[in-house]
Image (cartoon, rainbow, N blue to C red; front, top):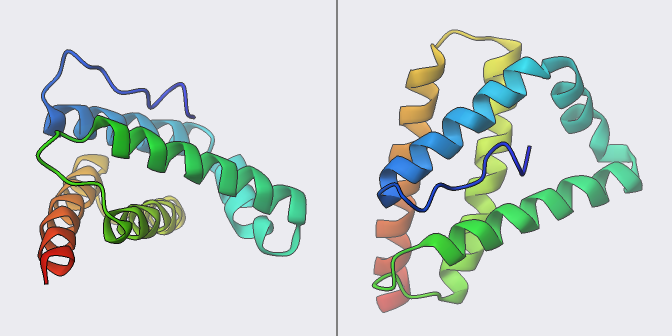
Length: 127
């Protein structure tokens, strides 16, 4: 999945995010049984937890390194990015198990939540 969701530096930041989210959702849908099993079965298995944590760490580093220089890397941002990755995983799992929304709406929701996260994180870090 990490390779499938690689960012395209030729795209604008929001386009990169949308493309990566589409790739994530498409990959998860194409491998739904495995994705659900991994996410649902990871709670009690240390090896699966390590795999999930490594994937989440990679995603956080990728996102943080792709942000425009005007977005300051703060402890608040790092914590928020980790939370957003958890949100992406939880929302993806929910969508796979009950696909009431089309993929494009799920992507748009995740994009807007990411933008809100950046805005809120900057405000909290400044206070």
